[in-house]
Length: 334
Image (tube, rainbow, N blue to C red; front, side):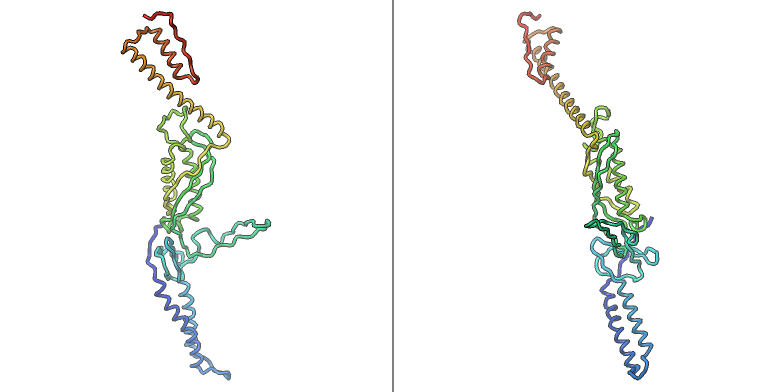
């Protein structure tokens, strides 16, 4: 693994006057070589040492100019000299470096064959390769909006899931040397992590799971699931020198082929939950009514009449439609 080493660049404003002097000295030396050599139309030769010095100044000026570069805020340049990593410059501004530093692209290989894109009129035009960027690496936050993926959750139900990842390059040396292309690497690992995340958790709680209400689900625990996704992504992207700032789910739904069945199941679970609350409340009310009747001595019920009264009260309290109880007035109660 490559570790980043930060270096302090030479200010471009210090070397710029030198380049200007070399460009000015070139024509002056060439002109003076002809003047000093007394070159006329009849013959003569320039002063060759002075003439060669002028050409050398021109060559040196051109080589010096190649070393100038600029960096914007949150941008870095990886310095590579004859295949050897020399360091990373993070200071923004106008700077100068060794003209022989490599000037390749830090992103996708510019020399690779680019795919053809269809334009208007079904005409095909080759995508031109991007120009070299002197191994400049953006340190700004980038957003990866993942595609919708169809995977199976923990219970085997097919679901559609998508996530958005906010990431940035933290170690430029790892991003350039340890992976082939950092953008492709992040996209691939993000898709892998989302697929793995969906298999770790169920979509929603179910009566047959037996896990209880504390079970972590994709639908009910969005914050916990997002934190787990961010942690897993950070582990996967650490070898590429990438820092994950945020990772959250943007889409979550059952696959179309089971969406209707799962909707009916959710409706049934809602009905069962409502019935459970109604029954629990009805039992409490019946218990309270029997206790109050016994404490106040309103009526003395035996076991048979107590059971009948409990049944009537439960029907009245739990029935969906209005119930009219039938009261017996001819039977004495002992």
